[in-house]
Image 1 (spheres, rainbow, N blue to C red):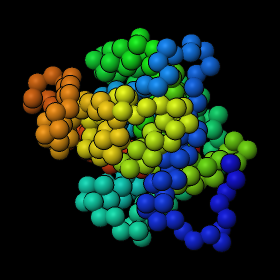
Image 2: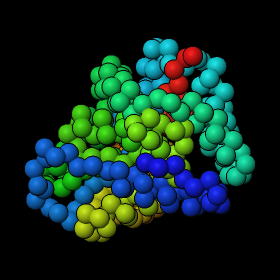
Image 3: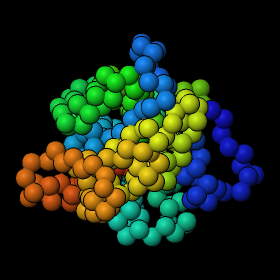
Image 4: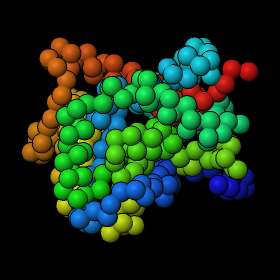
Length: 293
């Protein structure tokens, strides 16, 4: 993947979001071993963090890489703070966003795709496999049994998203695409993180490519940030929803599934999820991939 022309004008947030979605859809691959689905016009799209998996997949990945001395605690806390400020306070100031992105991306440059994929396999087994929500996994299997294709749509790096999808026997995944040349990361994203509106762009682009009728498709998420994606399909479902998504789903008559045990645990999960989400954007952009020099 070639680096962008340095003479081009910097993309604004909307353009970056659109480019991220288009890149994620283009990078989505179908597992060649899968049989041809019986229903070629319908599919299901699943968010990952707190929807398919307890907590943030990138947080679990970061812990695994931290144990392998890939980065220091100071590294991740410094970059995570900038992402937390941006995502919790909600100030989309272009300069602040650029600062957070550049801070995170400074760690990924020079590492290889193969390196990330190999460690991702190990860390999935040790930290992620047992955190898959059985209820959500059953919903995904239901779509597969009906002959439909099932994709993950997540802000996590596409390499990690693909590992999770393959391990769960799903069709494929769309995730944040990092630029790389000859298998080595450059430290830049293609567009931006696959988050919010970018997910809707990715789903729309994939649907056009695969000939899907979005009116007969389903989408699942825990976060109101994914309302653009959920609103695209005919069957949106709230899984372990945050308060805003729960209220919206009730108002619209959407199905709601909550697999968390106990209301107190659920409320605690919202707080942990918010903090993990803030760190997720940071690590998705590359902070977890820096090897201590």
